[in-house]
Length: 381
Image (cartoon, rainbow, N blue to C red; front, side):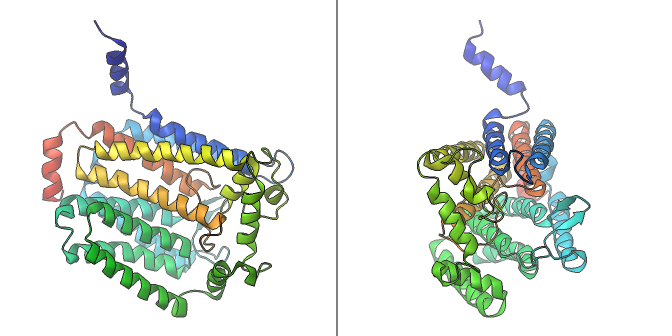
C-alpha cells in the first residue's frame, strides 16, 4: 500500500521542474514588476518586464525538461567561453556608448549584454576546472590559471568601462576559490594583489566620473547635487519607507523621479520606500529560500561539476544582491548593478531563469550514470 509520502516522492521524481527553486524567483520578479509599475501615471517598464518574465519562465521549463549533461564537456564549455570573449571584444568596436559604456548590443527594441553570457561561461569553466583540481587547489599554479580565465573577461569589461560587472566577475572568481578550499596564505596574497590593482585602477584605469562616485561614497556630502546625488536619494527612499512603507505605487522618491534609474539600478531603494522594513524582510526571506535551495542542490549533487556550477550561480546571485543593496544603503560606491530577478531588463533575467533551468536539469539527470560521469570528470571530457 502506497502512503502519502511515497506518492509525493513519486510525483517529484516524474516532475521535470523544481517548484521550491522556481517559486521564489517568480515571486521576486513579480515584486520587481509591482515596484517599477507607474499604474498609468507615466512611462513604465513593467509591461515589457512582464513579457520578459513570461519568456524567462518558458526558458526555465524548456531547459529543465532537457538532458543538459553535455554542458559538462570541455569542448562545449571552451566554445562558450571563447564566444563570450569574442562578443565582449566586438562591443569595443561596433557598440554605441550608453551612459558612457559600450556594454550592450542593440537590435532595434531588444538589447543584449554579452557580460551575462560571459558569467555563464566563466561559471561553467571554473566549475569544470575546479571539479578536477579542487583537491590540489593549495597549489598556487591552479589559482593563477583559474585567475587567468577570469582576468580575460574582466579586462574587456573594464575597458568598456563597466566597473560594476568587473567587480561582480572578481567576486564570482574569488567566491568559487573560497568554496574550493583556498589556503589563508594564498588568500592574503590575493588580497595584496587586489590592493595593488585597486591603486593602479585609481591612478590609471578609472574614469573621472568613477573616481567622483568613490569620493562621494567616502564623503557623501561632498557633492550631493553631482556624483553623490543618486546615493543620497537612494538613502532617502530607503529611510522614508519606515516600518510598513508608503504603499504600492505611492513612492514619492521613485514615482516623482527624484530617484534616478529606480526601475533598474535602484529598484531595491524604490521597493523599500513603498514596502517598508516589513517588506524588506519578506524580500530577504525570498532570497534566503532561493539560496537555501541552491545550497541543498549543490550538497546533493552527483558530480563535482554540478556542485561547483550550482554554487557558482549562488555566489553570483548573492554578489549582485549584496552590491545592489549596499549601494542603496550608501555602504558601497554607485556602480549601476542590477538585483537578481527584480531589476528591469531581459538579458540578465534570461541568464537567471536559464541558470535555474540548467541547474534543475543537472540535478534531475545527474544520478543516471554517476560512475561514468565521475570518470569523465577526471579524464577531462
